[in-house]
Length: 91
Image: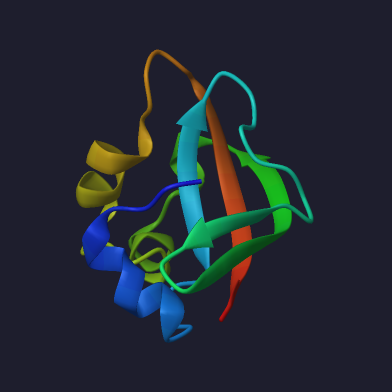
């Protein structure tokens, strides 16, 4: 699981604890640990949601200024399934 560079600091500080991804199927698993700088992102929950569930508040919680900003980054390839991934940073 990779993140845009500008999110690394907020993730490490615990300010960003979720991510929205648009994929064909989940590319991470619950309990998985994915490297980020000097630690790991530990996935604690994955839920499939709808595009309509992406609110401005969820976008901000994910580290983005708004829904449009989030959607520009969340879509990876031709996937259409929307996933909300909760995680913790472990340093």
